[in-house]
Amino acid sequence: MMTFRILILGGTTEAREFAARLAGREDLAVTLSMAGRTVNPVVQPVPVRIGGFRGPEGLADFLRESRTDLLVDATHPFAARISANASAAAAAAKVPLLVIQRPEWKQTTGDHWTFADSIPAAVAALGERPRRVFVTLGRQELKPLEAAPQHHYVIRSVDPVEPRVDVPHAEYILDRGPFELAREKTLLEGARIDAIIAKNSGGSAAYAKIEAARMLGIPVFLVRRPAAPQGSAAGSVDEALARLDHLLKPPAERGE
Ligand SMILES: NC(=O)c1ccc[n+]([C@@H]2O[C@H](COP(=O)([O-])OP(=O)(O)OC[C@H]3O[C@@H](n4cnc5c(N)ncnc54)[C@H](OP(=O)(O)O)[C@@H]3O)[C@@H](O)[C@H]2O)c1
Picture 1 (cartoon, rainbow, N blue to C red):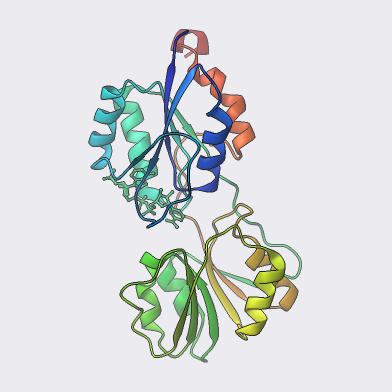
Picture 2 (cartoon, rainbow, N blue to C red; picture 1 turned 90 degrees about the vertical axis):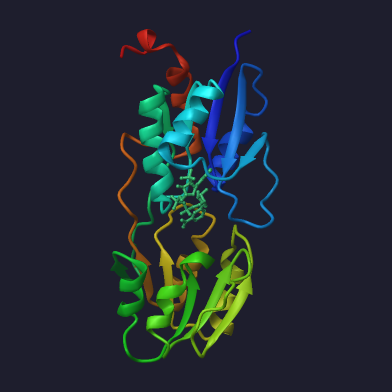
């Protein structure tokens, strides 16, 4: 039987789920690629390679050398660079690209959202009055908080924030999703949070804080996504699986 080689660019719940759904298939050889940002990444259902490829050319070389048949971009919606690299590398190496991108969260009744185009803009939108702000931006993107030192920040991240954010009032929580509504509500109430600053990541793993904010009437300062990767993305793992067999066919049979 012919084996198709699939490289999944991951670092997300979707990438892990997609890999898990393919792991049992004997017609596929699946590798999951991680950037290597997380100190203790969760165990993955397929072989993993870790670290950058050195730009789009490096990724294109990797695709050729590994004789990859399909590249899957299942990276986070805010990981714009790797998605652009994936698109360029797939075109250069003539490898089909399947993008999985979860839909963004949509505002609903009871949500008090302020949208911002960047993290600095979201921090500025918090205003002059000191607030108690719950922060879930990722530990490498906290520098803009230093422009608004009047607030008290409660910062949650998977790995420790080093160096600490240079503001007078900050506390740090280490935790990894998925997060559950009752616990998020308890956290927000216990820390007397009156604003949340977050990315519009979409998906279910991080949504509980948004629901808890709605229940408690807490305003959310939401950073809009960067431009989506080119081409039409599968919005879910199920949709990606449905597209997979079609994409694995030779180009002539795909009608291209
Ligand atoms: N940004 C977020 O908010 C966020 C949230 C949750 C998870 N993540 C995950 O964390 C990782 C890094 O995100 P980021 O925002 O720093 O990415 P990014 O800014 O788009 O990419 C920066 C560089 O990191 C390397 N890289 C990123 N993802 C990779 C992968 N899956 N495998 C191998 N190399 C990868 C690439 O290096 P080279 O150019 O050397 O190839 C890329 O140019 C991604 O896997 C992403 O899915 C990101």
